[in-house]
Length: 211
Image 1 (cartoon, rainbow, N blue to C red):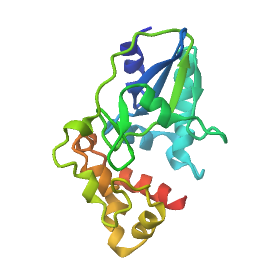
Image 2 (image 1 turned 180 degrees about the horizontal axis):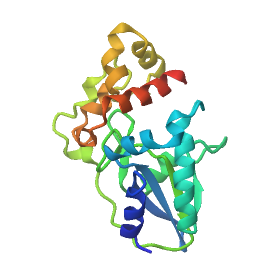
Image 3 (image 1 turned 60 degrees about the vertical axis):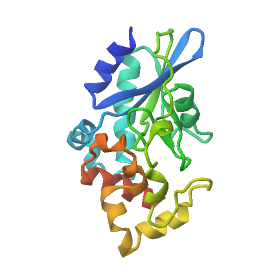
């Protein structure tokens, strides 16, 4: 089994590999995230999309990633497992494909600030992995994410002001972020390539506002 073979199977389900590392000499942990922009169409066609569950995307993720884990003879792990919750952010950094950004969010070398993880699979074998890649922020001209937030909820040298962010989203002035996604995340040049449709962005923001 190779990383390339895993990627082909993951993409067939609307997912993609967002990093991997060796938690032990004889195992490999693979991180899975949405294969955007193709992911949203796959999710909309799934039975979970019409579910009355408060977390239909979690249901979809557990079914799809669970099936992949069984096919790969591994064990699936999900961000919602807990408490205690799995350290997905730490695992992402261990993979060498994600780093801390100037606004303290995780930035991925391909997905930028719109990176997300739907789950992980621990495989009972050691798979060859690509080398770590440097943070894309190191060569980002102007670092636009640092000034994009309309209420400065995300800014360098300060923790994420979740309360200020949610107040803005619930206000008339927050329509742009609410309908199209976080402006700071969208300002990342790498995130532009994700091309999330507005319906997907609004879905994620609505879930965030419920927290």
